[in-house]
Length: 478
Image (cartoon, rainbow, N blue to C red; front, side, top):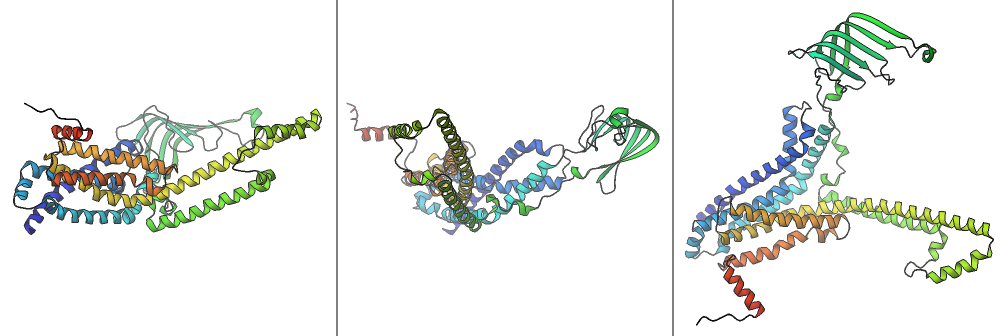
């Protein structure tokens, strides 16, 4: 039996690793397609891009691993069924449950490893990934002068070159507008030709200009609005220095991102959820007290039973009609203004509480995901393995189609539950556990059918079952 267990493990682990990296690669390509505009043209070093892709791939593990388990188990048992290996094992007296036993142990181990990853490694990967992505997206495009195009990438300057030689350094017909004084085009430098050089530390760009003119409107002189003084200076050679520090990738302090719910483990999330729950309750209680003190009549109103319309009419007749028309109009305007103020106050409070509650729900969602991720890895095995034994088709054809259908169904239900939880319609322990609990009866049903060698896709068997349930008599053949 040990040789059989080793054979099953070797047969399973190969497709598992293969499908995991295929799924990870597909998700990584989706990431590149989404953020390609933020990466291209910024002169990023190769190791920066490699680090970004590595951190991004780590955050995709919660999606890639369940899909890999489902697809690999389906492929393995489908391939064994197609080559009659399952039939040979069953003929030798080995049940399907015994065949699945070593893989069940492996699935339990993978589920535990998945929880450790989600609780320990994933928060750190999210921190590294999101902070680096933020810095990359904030970085300016690389310095790039084109012939005849005005370039404004350097803050405070607009540069145009008529022609740039093939060496990339020699430029002709240069025009530079100086906007550092924030007064418009008051200073312009032109030159017939020049050279561009980088400082040794690559923080500054040096323009060596030859045979040019400086034009400047003197706005620092008295009565310049009337006299409009103008200064023109001719030069044979001039050096201009431009700061390129904005084009360097500057790293933001990762401590600024650590309070985000995606960068916390279970312990940190529980602390954050407790503090946020207490804060929301405290603010709600303080607002209720403030509302009652500012609007004294609120404390005497019955919040359950609304005030009848007839009572309001009697109130108007009994009180307001005792005043003259001018006072009556002033009282109505004052009451209207107070009502609008109270309405705006309540709407602002509701908006504030909605934002805080939604942030609280997102913390609860992330915490529940750490558990549902590991449980899903275990449950999806009990869908893929028996389904593969029933379908008896190996390779990446039919198994990939079936696995995709089940995984999309699981993901859609998970997404719906997450949205309901984020909006406060369902508590987190319900919304986030709908999808895993949905897998339980499906896994039990498929395992039972595979154990008794039932043909799941036999149309006659299903028609017979439906007739039996509906009590439709079958026609006897004479």
